[in-house]
Length: 69
Image 1 (tube, rainbow, N blue to C red):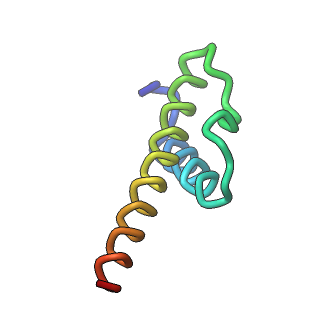
Image 2: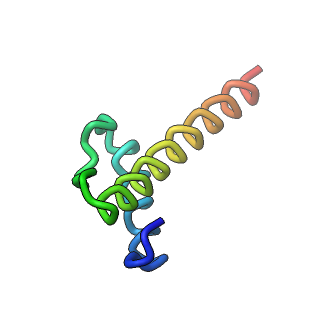
């Protein structure tokens, strides 16, 4: 994590990634440039949010499938 980024900025990036998955965007839609340390940190946060959303959706789908059976 870059010391120049606040927790609020990192959480915002994670939320953007989370929302991107829910909107059906591809992981290549990450808006952050990955060439600088700050961009790397923001991109990492975005991808963590994206992955968390994907995991949450899979869990919800499994729970719904189990509830039907």
